Image (tube, rainbow, N blue to C red; front, side, top):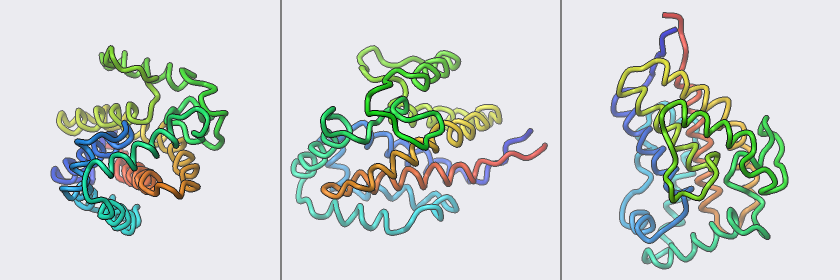
Amino acid sequence: MRQIMLLSKKQQSAMLESLNILCDIFWGPDLVKCSRLIKTDYFQQFEKMGAIWKHASPGILDNLRGLIRNFSDEASLFSFLEEAYIRIFINARTSVVPLYQSCYDNSGTQQIEPRALLMGPSAVLMQERFADKGLSLANDLNEPPDHLAIELEYLYFLLQEGWSKQDDVLISEAAAFNSDCMLPWVTVFHDRLAAESDCPFYPLVAALLVAYLKGLKNTLMMQPG
């Protein structure tokens, strides 16, 4: 089988940079990130992805940019995003949208009680994937390996290595990991976030993430070679 890549080098770069942006956001806000959000066109890479962008509503970026323009400095934006991040994703009493795949069932169609299965089968499988590639988590990272940002980092690794080395095996693995592992539960994650109205930033970014994963699924194609 030969991997057919329908992306130019510039599109591949935009895909990787966009994936890195999504990963950074789901690690949580800080002042440096908030400064970039305010002072740069933080999401412009998404518009450079070409055909993949058709899977996202153009209103997503407009709404994100409009939301960010409501804040005059990084400190106020950080305060807004930090409160929401903790409330939505971290606080055990209020979070109904955990960031861990283990908190969702295997098919991604039903959410399990938040935090009930931390270090569940998906976390163990992620550990095995890391070991197979000779990778490891940082010693000071106190998160299960199926944290959304960690899975995005692994997807980044597969794509970056696959494209740079023209390795069809890695690209095929990226396609399978994206379609079979990430997209099902991230879709439910996005649906759960739809009820969040106090901070539309994270629902919008989740919509951006789902569009990204769907676009990637449809772009990485297999063809006999």
